[in-house]
Figure 1 (spheres, rainbow, N blue to C red):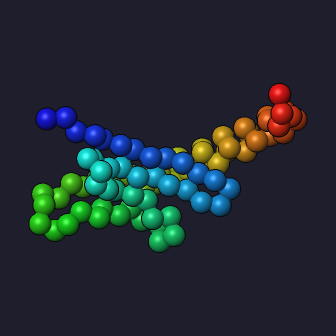
Figure 2: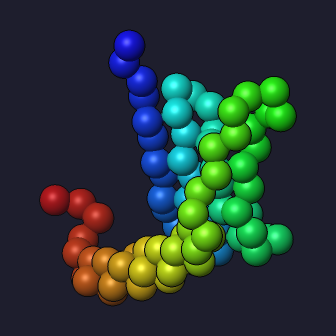
Length: 83
């Protein structure tokens, strides 16, 4: 059958998210507070592990996201809020 595979990556000035899910169940997410990747799957299923370095990639993605956010805000600072 068909499955829904989802990846979420986003950031703000003070927070960020990097998460992977399958069919509505989280498979992995970056815990930026505790500096680690978390695989919240229950013990009774076949465990899926992500490659070493996935958390480091998430940290790098957050740096890129915040840089892009800063550049976008700077580029849009003189655009009026109304048309």
